[in-house]
Amino acid sequence: MHGLIGRKLGMSQVFTEQGTLVPVTVIQTGPCTVVQKKTEQKDGYAALQLGFGSRRPQRVSKPVAGHCQAAGSGPFEVLREFRTPEVEGYEVGNQITAEQIFQTGERVDVVGRTKGRGYTGVMKRHGMSGTPASHGTHEYFRHGGAIGNCAYPGKIFKGKSMAGQYGNARTTTKNLRIVAIRSEEHLVLVHGAVPGARGGIVTLSKTKKG
Image (cartoon, rainbow, N blue to C red; front, side, top):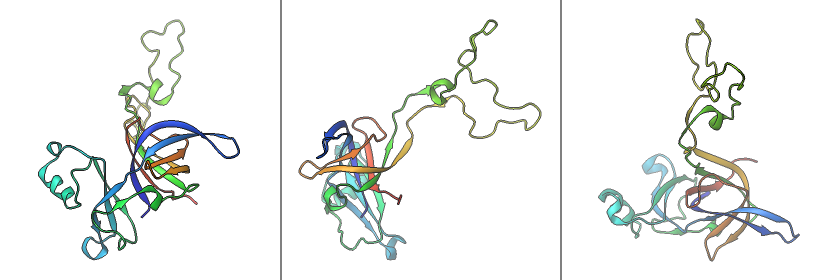
């Protein structure tokens, strides 16, 4: 197993043994419950589906409620699937905590959803400078300027930086160091910032970098 579901509680700071101040993000990781176990023989791949948090039974459909009830618990707030080469040591209903997977000093990747900032223009979304506010410029100060050529190619290429939805996107912050694990509170302190607002759901997994 190489990952867990957590909730971003906010940022803080801790001091190392050498007296260095380290900014950290506090993440509540579980305990996560094994809701479903997938195997090579039955599903074609090996994975574990984990549940985190809780929801009111009235807020989920009956199939989802029955699926979660198989793990001996009520409906979960979020379900995530983690691929793992070995699932034999886990059973449906088992509780997985951070200290069983991660160690202090280990590197992790954190996946979250960034803050949604609504529909914005090119200056706020892409950091463009806008049009010079000289004489003769009217109602064009925050525009993006020219977006294409004339006859050739006769279109706007896909991916052009233009106005649109800013934020509310899945983002991964890679290779963050675990500063401390507080098992009694199910907290993981990660060096640096992770995407998302306070209270948002994040996913921690062992880094894929060297």
